[in-house]
Each structure stands twice: as structure tokens, then as C-alpha cells.
Length: 136
Ligand code: HEC
Image (cartoon, rainbow, N blue to C red):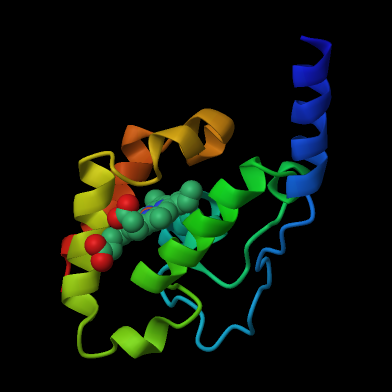
């Protein structure tokens, strides 16, 4: 029993040294939308879908750090509000996709909503996003 605990502690310490990419690359072209829309997206989505991730203390502790780093990496790959102009010509589609994910409560992911109460969007906030997303 004692031995198991010691081994676990050694593993927990050891994994702290596994290198992870927690960088914020430069913002290319920031998300362009009306102020109310942008405020909602900023508080609920930017941590994973922008180059302005706030790496709070627990994102630096393994094994949580593995999950947050991989979410940010994946999130940016799928949709990056810091590279907004790359969707030019495709805005209608991207906006529709954003609304679809919010409407179906896929985004922000549930485990993120538990940790961040302000990412739990109210009906009013969802209405604002919907009106923006579905207006050409
Ligand atoms: C905790 C990190 C995290 C947050 C916060 C987050 N997302 Fe995501 N998002 C991801 C990840 C990871 C993926 C890619 C894998 C997947 O689809 O689950 C993704 C995928 C997406 C996609 C799908 C793109 C595609 O190509 O299918 C959209 C759209 C999206 N997110 C929108 C949003 C919006 C809008 C918000 C805020 C309301 C948000 N996300 C908040 C992590 C996040």
C-alpha cells in the first residue's frame, strides 16, 4: 500500500515534466462582429478557439494540462477567432456552424461549462448569437 502511494506520487511528479505546447501565437485577424456578439464569444469560446487563451494555474498541472492543451490545440484547428479573415467568403457557413454547435449545446463543451459558469450561455445570449448567425 505504502509502496503504491509512493509510486503514484513519483508518477505524478514525473508527468509534470512532459513538455506541452501552451503558447499563444500572434493574432492574425481578430473576430469581427457587433460588440454584444463578440463579448459572448470572447467569454465563452476564446479560451479554446483563439490565440488569446488564458492559461490559468490548473492548466499547468498534469494530468489536467494534457486535457486543456489538447482542447486548445484541437479547438484552434477547427475554428480560430484570431484568424477570422481566413473564413472570408465562407462567413455564412461558419456562422451557421457556430450557431448549430451552441443550439445543440455541444459548445462550449459540458466539462468546460461546469468549470466556467460564465460560459453557460443564457437564453438571451443564445438569442443574440442566433440573430447574428442567421442574418446574412
Ligand atoms: C474547452 C474548449 C472549448 C471551448 C470553450 C469551446 N470549444 Fe468549440 N471546440 C472545441 C474542440 C476541442 C473542438 C473540436 C472537436 C469537437 O468538435 O469536439 C471544437 C469544435 C467546435 C466547432 C466545430 C467546428 C467543426 O469543424 O466542426 C465549432 C463551430 C465550435 N467548436 C464552436 C464553439 C463556440 C461557438 C464556442 C463558444 C460558445 C466554443 N466552441 C467553445 C473546444 C472548445
